[in-house]
Image (cartoon, rainbow, N blue to C red; front, side, top):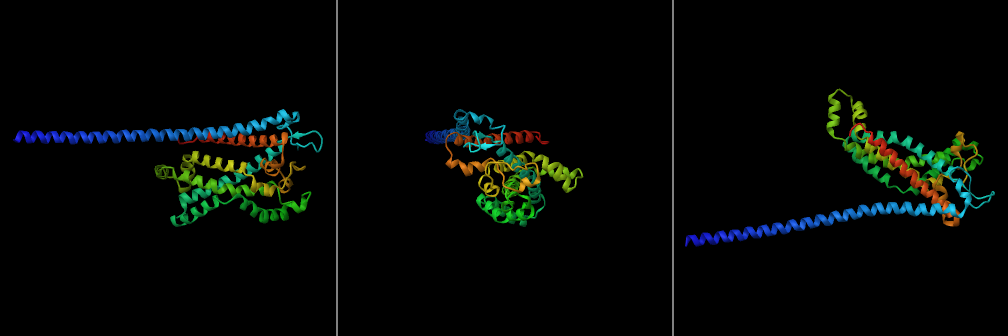
Length: 331
């Protein structure tokens, strides 16, 4: 009787063990299937992003290069600053050099001025400021980052341009609009890209391990030397990314900058003087905003070419910044 009871118990135990293995095997199969499905979804999303980016480049590029087939005068688009696609002053001309110069000048000045200010603010918020003050400043910074560009442009239109007109616009050919131009556009871009660079820089600085700070202080560095010689080099990749994000937003900004440029299609005659910054001027986004809806034929394709050049310049900026970031002290 005892042997039969033991045998029954063993058989029951084996059945339980087998049922447990079956359930565990079923759970493992479901988990692996879910992992494969998730991996495939992520792969499809990644491929879709690449396809969308390439499609944008191809679509804008194809439409832009069509201007060479429609108008033989368009071949001087990188060697001339004369923009006259309708031929009002003679033969048609699609010189984009002035637009490129305007975007490069305003973007470069805005980034040069914004970068040290943004890095200083990011260091202050991560290394110096008390917690209660950071809890106040960070939400304000995030709100400022999401502020619509039209609001910034409008505020600049009613406040910054009158100040520039009164201070520097007296020598302008048209004193009434002397405050418009590159100077106002640079100020607008600084206001727009500062929150972006600061936010990304804060995340980059917080990602630096605390051991880097402790090692620097242990070697006798002061707090400032620790930030300058240890924290900033360690976060250089993230800081370079922050500058790139600000740079790409600056060079591609259209509405706010167009509101304070008030140019048409020509560079100022006194281009190499300081007064050129305080009179109506141009950049690459201005003609697209003002004239593209009414354009047709080769002129319409020329605006596509301006947009394609914007894409190429942004891509080059990203490549340069990634190269500089790869030379970081900390690998």
